[in-house]
Length: 178
Length: 365
Image (cartoon, rainbow over all chains, first blue to last red; front, side):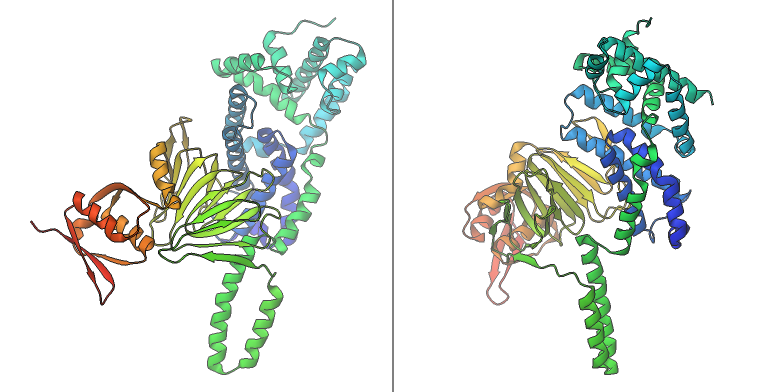
């Protein structure tokens, strides 16, 4: 069995550039941690390449890789849960619900995910009302806690949370009404 | 004016911000479990949250990852691959040398050997073996203790503990691994790879047995089936659990994990939970106790041969399936064992001076 994408260096690089970011972003949903997500995707690419002679791909290389990333992420969470890395049983269970959801999402949907979504979101953030945008950016991009934002802007924590909710709701609607 | 948020919307936001407390997490969990429409509602927000990361392609590190991947694809960096390459190359070398010798071209053989030298990354190993009838105790550079049962080969490279702690095992060993979360302890056998951070466990992987058994006395151990290419082949063992890899098994075994109530999907791997007593039986050899846990006479013979360095023949096929359970502390000779077994099973035995072989026979009434 040969995988055509691996036969030619140029073709492989194009393939990698086309799908790598999407795979990492998919993995992040499970792992919550960019470094781990990158490692998992890297490992999947490497293992697939090493076993390229023995792997029988019935669909496409990209869907094969997505499934492999998904399986590895599911294993990663399982290990994390069993080795007691979560602070509580509840947290572990919530993570499991998330993992089940992402694991069941159709691969088709994953492949549809385009760089454009990112651009669209960036634009939508810019379009938010001033105060709302500022709070959202401080939280999402600067990594500040709600209490820190509240302190800086001299408002209540609850107001910060409400504004972040409003921002998310707005972004969500922009994303669904394409 | 800011409108007031619903309780659940507030909790969702606080959860996404990783600021939800335990009571809020519990509330969210129950709410999610209640109805599928609740889950759809939640994931619409979660998805938006995930997609709102700044500059996705930068986060993914595509350029950097590609460079690293190319490096690995071009030069095998890891141990594993070097060893595999070496063995393929060695067998090629052997074959090539034979052909060349026949042709009488010694000169060309030198060239091959030269190339071989250039390709090798010099890794030296410390190898420790035990003969039948012999046991050894080894302390590794990080303080990890390893007990080797009879007829075992154990080795580790001089790179041990540089990045991770890797050892190779054929036979049986008991490990007491010093805890070091930054450097995983890895046991490689012919069929499975075992990974731990710090724990006590027993591995039985004699080449002549049909299975590889890993038994955990304390801590957590991860087992990976090396013969599965998909990568979803990892089984986690907790304290008092035993993982069995069946060498001849080609099918996927799905077995319920009794603790979690979830199916695990090992390939040719299964795990069971043991009592303290049973676990004790499995690792007792390191304390000089010879134990048989409901084993057949045939299995016992294999153990006895290794333990006492003798040769045993079972004369009657019927006898092979007799089972025996028992524990022998500080046994000095095989006759002590056979005498006790004789009381429970209808056997007799004789020792042949010439062939140095013990023959076990059925006791005729």
